[in-house]
Length: 244
Image (cartoon, rainbow, N blue to C red; front, top):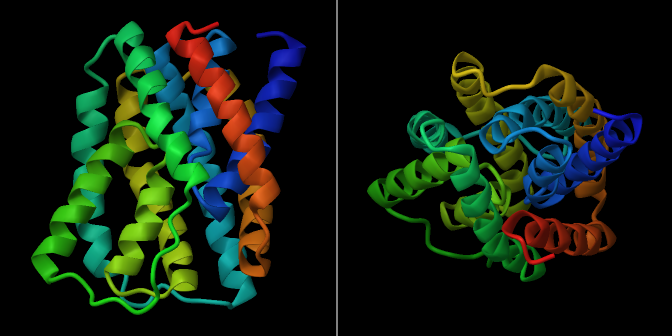
């Protein structure tokens, strides 16, 4: 890994940490960056989780310090998401690197669309029945355990439909990411899918991005970051699937 690749990972991690905390989809930027830095697909997916863990932890602390919201009542969505994340992380570790890179590149297309058309949930909706909530968050957990990218956007919408207000939903989303990543990461480590050098460099940027992202999420104002992410993700998606 060259010095400029290291700088690129730190900057990318910083941007992704902010994006993940304020909305979601930051991994659509950092996983391709890891691949372009020479980390194979599955190992890029695993290495990225180190940064996600750092960003989520710093964001949770930042939200807590702001005292703007709480995690009350989050257990009903946390359990199925955790179960799903274990299933997803074990399943994804079984596929080949080339297959992962192609699948991830294709998945980035709907992720970017979700980012452009960021969900704006209605604040007054009838919450889902308990069984629907369990099934939905089980599926989200499986996707998050496998791919991570864009899961924050889906979580934000699903949490509001499960009965949480938007500010609380954002806080719970970050906390769920922390727990899910803490459970999924050991699976990738055991399978040898973490390259620690690039992972720790990326995590340094993620750590700062998570903290500042939580501050910005409370105050509002994410439009510029989202535009940056969309442009970067489109370019890097094209690189992965061979468009250019």
